[in-house]
Amino acid sequence: MNTIIKTNFNFPGQKNVYHGKVRSVYTLENDQLLMVATDRLSAFDVVMPKGIPYKGQILNQIATKMMKDTEDLVPNWLTATPDPNVAIGEACEPFKVEMVIRGYMSGHAAREYKAGKRILCGVPMPEGMKENDKFPSPIITPATKAEMGNHDEDISREDILKRGIVSEEDYLVLEDYTRKLFKRGSEIAAARGLILVDTKYEFGKTKDGKIVLIDEIHTPDSSRYFYAEGYQERQDKGEAQKQLSKEFVRQWLIANNFQGLEGQTVPEMSDDYIKTVSERYIELYENITGETFVKADVSNIEARIENNVSSYLNS
Image 1 (cartoon, rainbow, N blue to C red):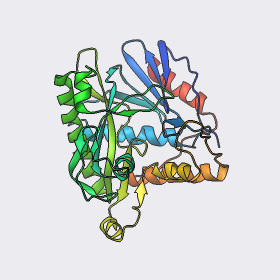
Image 2 (image 1 turned 30 degrees about the vertical axis):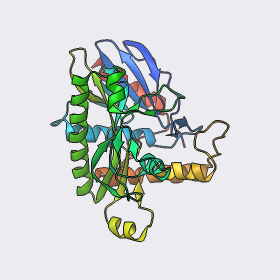
Image 3 (image 1 turned 90 degrees about the vertical axis):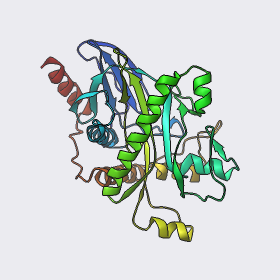
Image 4 (image 1 turned 45 degrees about the horizontal axis):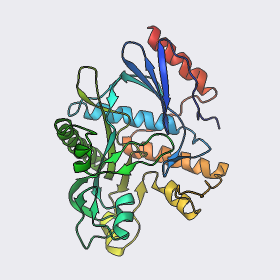
């Protein structure tokens, strides 16, 4: 199955390119940014050696739909999606923090809680909680934005302001936007029989100084979902929740002795396992959007992207 892992495009008006963990970001003239969602899979801040078929298309199309569903609340960078794997929008200066918001104590928060911590990013977590319990109200637990190969790190609001990473005026806007987006995302999820457990948002500033939502939103890579049906029953019985997120990949890696720590080797992913990961991502897409996933032509992904982008930019 063909996948796109590396990109080496030379688009009309291209000025430079930055390769992130999953996306390649091309800066074009006229203050335009072009983002290619690859099929790379990242877990524990490490990029896996093999791509996952259709993953880039899935992430790009979920993010596009969710941006359209929230643009009345929060402005975003997006102007066009000329290809299933490509988004084009306004070039922004990204804030160097990710705004993580958690409605439930899961994943990283649960691991920290189990280790005995009761404060996460300066925010207290109540005593007596168990994994996957709902917080009394959602908590914002920011992370610093790491360069490729480095780990994102938890950071408190106080440290962000003290270190001048974001001004207080801007940070208040980021917090407000984060809460609004999470509320809307939770409502969209509930309508699909899902619970939006936690997610992260990234923001940037346009050249006019406007703060906008950038990157992805409410995708299985940036968010964790539970199935609402049976949630309380599973909690009461102390059972694991039925998840829609890439947590299943993290759990598989943990079971194969990999958590991105020094000296650990990424376990071999067989073609059969990669196929099941691809199928899970398609399931995620259909559940999150409520739409049937239509597979793009992957016979020559690079040529398809090149043609679609060129015809858009030349039109």
